[in-house]
Image 1 (spheres, one colour):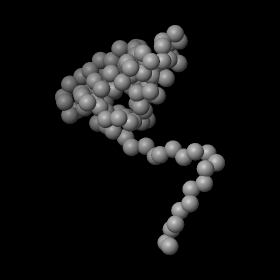
Image 2: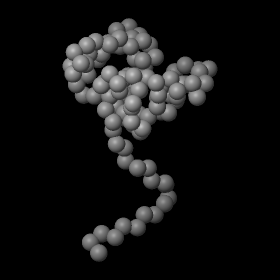
Image 3: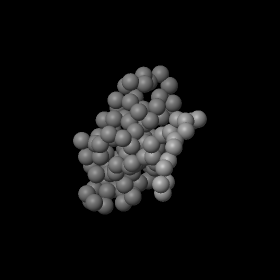
Length: 109
């Protein structure tokens, strides 16, 4: 099961676009995986840490008419599968801070 939060590509996974698809090679598993067009779009986005919701939004932008809920669910299933194949790693992200909010820090005191 993929962890909650952001995931990104593992550094040791080789990938190359082939037409509108992508070919991945996992050095750990010693096997190749071919991604369809949708998978290739999401793989490209996983150069940086992304959540299933963020990937779903990318799909909605790329494929107009795709319902947001379905896109996010499909992206979650995609992340789950790639995580199970040991192609992704969990990536902690900095907590967001509300703009205009003051945070008091007591340093050295």
